[in-house]
Image (tube, rainbow, N blue to C red; front, side):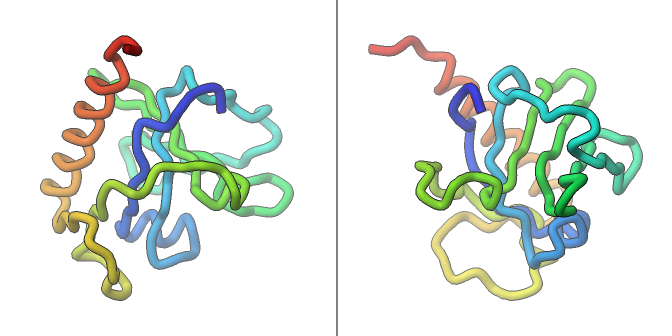
Length: 141
């Protein structure tokens, strides 16, 4: 990673559950320019749902979730990295929220906002993205 994550989010959608073989995805969201992409043969990408806005990639060696690339018209290109891909001692932000919480496997025991339903989850993600981009665009004091 060449830059700081915009935010960290916990996604409970069934696609993330299937991709991660876990009850939810714990991912850090980056601008694409802040992440060096792995060599093409290092990751096997798959589209889980059309249109292919999100390409999800697993390590070609160990088959663990490695990277997700989000590219949709009129939105910035984003890269999502699973928290598990970073060193355990790496400094990362706390999660900002749960999305698709209505699809959860079990209840979360934390105080993070919990967004339920497709539209509410998508809007929450876009609002967090807009807020993070606005905050990170401010010049250093």
